[in-house]
Image (cartoon, rainbow, N blue to C red):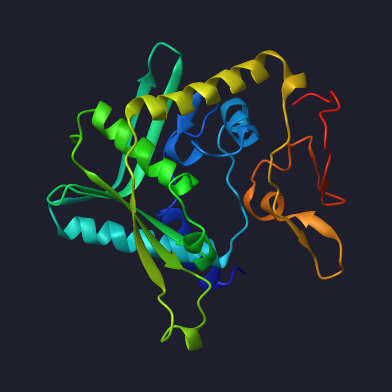
Length: 256
């Protein structure tokens, strides 16, 4: 019999689960905008594959999301899990975005991130989190949901601050994201589309992810922690060898 607490945990995860389009299609979501090209390629070719690893991060993030949902239900000026998508020019591609909350009264878009203090300390305006909120703003403006006068924010809640440190160190930070002109955002989108289209035409051009976050395990072996912990495509990735925990560093023509 399943542990009843595990059942509750699974129910919480399901309530906060992404409910957008998961099918293969030529699309770029806000969360993908600064992602590895290979992951974007997989999303286009195979659709969204759930990461089935139930971690503390997933559960805490889901609980946090449900709290935001409840807050938005209580206030007419707030809207949670706002999702929109638009066709991108005449490219045949779709742009999609989902933000955690929009405050229409204070003209604010805010995305909440359960992350590490390291991320905040090393954050800059070129970070993937910043690009994510920019594309949300771009899409919401193109669908006439908001005007160009909204401010963009990230709320970072640190998951790695120990209890005995919480009196001395902040456990959260709010960061304002600098808005970029639309042509700067579109230039980034155009670059992604160019690369992925070329890979779809010729798979020999596909390249391994640039930064695999190499770490050492307890037995001293090195492994790509980005693949192990965060990539849901490793089971189909020809650059990844699940037995030795090391990626193949070239496309060996095995097909995708």
